Image 1 (tube, helix red, strand yellow):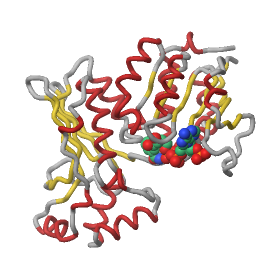
Image 2 (image 1 turned 60 degrees about the vertical axis):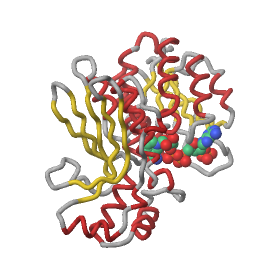
Image 3 (image 1 turned 90 degrees about the horizontal axis):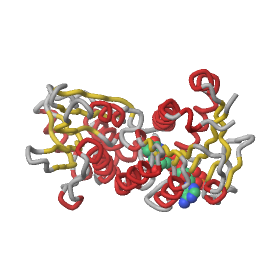
Image 4 (image 1 turned 90 degrees about the vertical axis):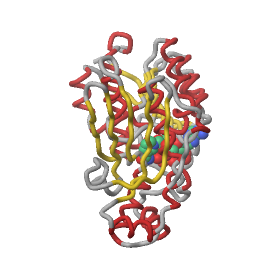
Length: 328
Ligand SMILES: NC(=O)c1ccc[n+]([C@@H]2O[C@H](COP(=O)([O-])OP(=O)(O)OC[C@H]3O[C@@H](n4cnc5c(N)ncnc54)[C@H](OP(=O)(O)O)[C@@H]3O)[C@@H](O)[C@H]2O)c1
């Protein structure tokens, strides 16, 4: 049976999830694609770290070992931050590898350039997992675009902020205690700055803007606020008026084609589609000319939701280019 050879960049929460799904679903993937998937290499920063055993797969800390391996067809990227991820992916595209990434920090800034580069080199680039984890928002918007026109996208794009706001309301606890709870449960990083300041939601919003409107607003022109400014008194007052705080990222295009965005806590009423979205979930409302409004909701992060979005991209890409990919 033909094989498809892949490399993973990063073997943390997401990288390990990809490894697990590709192994756990080996037979189904074989049936679906007619190919065996071989994970030939995994790139990490620290080779000495104790981690899940990966028999038959080379663990390396040298990207050149992967980039110089001409047998590799696909690279899954799940490392952290803008660099060296952007350089690694640019080099991988140049070598003709197809790419699937989860790296929102890198992709918000460099996604448009990477997509152009990938198109120029005739390779595919999947980035479903960069925005709202397991919620298939990229695929949905991409499939709407040829027939419809997206006017506005808004939603809860940061599960950590949503969890904290939910706990403040449900348990009457202040921001810091709710944040501590999120950290204890693994829903917030030891350094939660990007989540609670709104930066993380802003990056996802910029990825959606580039996809839906073909451009991003000037980053400096987008007001970005976090939930760290919401007090327990604010939440209690809102509840008395049957209102709830949600951290909402919002992007829209006006009649002249100018794109406007905002990110921050917003008070919403019981009839709003985001009213019932509690806990770590994400939810996104897409408004279009023909559809009206469509709401998608689900897990915005975590090992399996994120990795399954990446494997979903991968399988879709195999279907699109089976003939090009298969190496015997
Ligand atoms: N976790 C989620 O739920 C989630 C959801 C959506 C998107 N994402 C995105 O997915 C990416 C991965 O997230 P994660 O949670 O899996 O992170 P993580 O658990 O911290 O794992 C990061 C992995 O990347 C490796 N790495 C980091 N810098 C590297 C470098 N310079 N060279 C080689 N390897 C390097 C690390 O190596 P060592 O193991 O040796 O340290 C580790 O294996 C991030 O961009 C994140 O924003 C995550």
